[in-house]
Image (tube, rainbow, N blue to C red; front, side, top):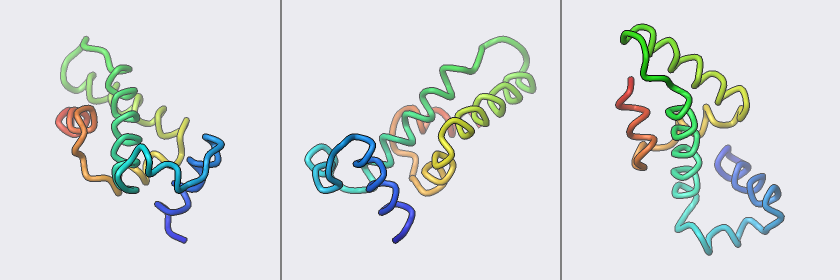
Length: 96
């Protein structure tokens, strides 16, 4: 079982639902991960301050992203395997 299959199964378990019921709300597995990646990006961006020069902001970005990935270990793989199409995920990529 691949990462995406096992992750969607775990997501369904955490929601007390069957994996098949996720597709009532999402078109496919990739759309589920688009939303998850966008949420990680949104929370990371919300943690970044506007103060300081670009080096300080980049350092703060790295620390915030690290915290997000520590809180949600599977987020790194989700971010790496998901094409950035959602608003916040695109903003996160653009920040770099």
